[in-house]
Length: 269
Image 1 (spheres, helix red, strand yellow):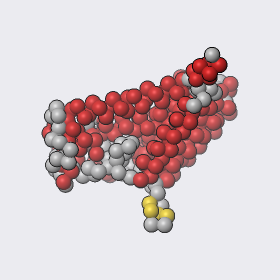
Image 2 (cartoon, helix red, strand yellow):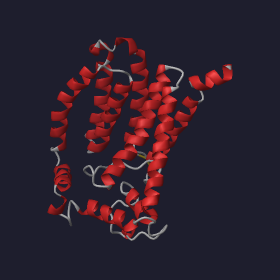
Image 3 (cartoon, helix red, strand yellow):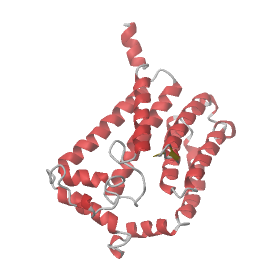
């Protein structure tokens, strides 16, 4: 959506909206988890609507990621595991049908399963990404010295920016970036664990998972561990909407951290 000459990506706002909604509804329904019709059906419908709207915009990866975050929050809300089995039985065939409904998705899947089949076509991006990862070595080529970002690697500024980081900063830089995301995950989930009420706890889980699992998905794509998707790397990938919403999530996490049980104990002591 273009507003006054600036573009805005609604799917990024949808992530935050769904996290807020699920944190609210699941905290209210905490005592009704054994009644799936009243406790789980409404949030499942809402998540399905958001994911469907994103999917019809030809963005399967973001829609899938939204559903994945919802499942994480269901787990954090102590939804009985037997309901996850039922959701899995429904989701696996549906996801398979949606995945195979577009030619470019099928090509990405085929190139992932057999990368050498089309190394100059559908498999080219992953090959170029792995080449950048290898070129970095231990210490990297140096900041600004990447050869792949000059045109060899498509989407080097957005979805595959981590490959450029690895090429310029090497394995040491890769470890640093992974460690920073690991520290963020640790602090975020610690905030969730010590939150003063159920709503803020689930909110912290959703916000932390959205940022850190998105980073994990992106790193897995760059390394060729999963099929190529359009999930950006938080804090690094180009894109104003993604950066804006990520900073909002971090601000909300900081706000939740101001009202934790541990700090309340310290103040009372």
